[in-house]
Length: 302
Figure 1 (tube, rainbow, N blue to C red):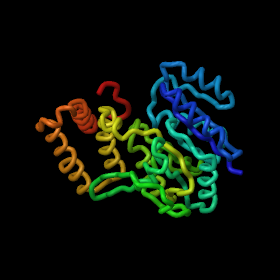
Figure 2 (figure 1 turned 120 degrees about the vertical axis):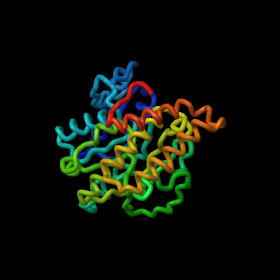
Figure 3 (figure 1 turned 180 degrees about the vertical axis):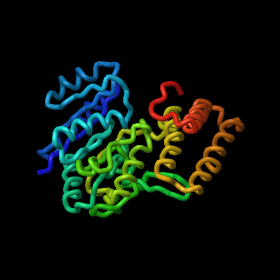
């Protein structure tokens, strides 16, 4: 049986992490290790996690390395321990007991599959979909979640479906793929890193698939993300990095910079109804400036 290491990042969110670990403890896949990478939490997360789940390995990074850096620490550790598969899993999720079995079975049935992801529904609306994989529009440079807001009625069938990318919220990858295409690109820090990683895998000839029968639930708030200057900063900056890394064409650049970014900046700057967007507006300005200067990674002040 193939051995799987699940990597869960924690950064000052002990309650969510404990709930995630409790759901993983009910998973019916025996060849499973769980690794928590603590990204420099300022509270007592590490102590509590170790006390509540002594069988879980906890690595302390010492500082916030972001989604990319924290997971890269975990993946390097897992590869060193001989894992056959590595699963990235957000700490604000809870999983079905059979979610991993379906993911591994899909990978084992087709050696061309290099990455696999689950059906992700909202925790507060368990039948409403957040993601069943993602698509990339290379004409506009836009990425979007497939199925978002719809009800899970079995409409995606039972067989693995090819998608452009999977969210890093739940992503199973073969160790052989990691060794061939590399780890996450640390320049992203957070956001767009999963789309670029999947693009790299597909370019190397691997299938990236959504497995409909594998299900998890995500405690995500679209409203909170929309209001966050940090999210606006990283989404704005990293989209430009993504376009550059993937060699997107001029049409995608023009649409992104003029049709979207310029129009948004002008609207938020000039129209009174968007006065509440001042912090997000500042985040976008900083993001575009940092992208122009090739300032990637973490930004402490937004």
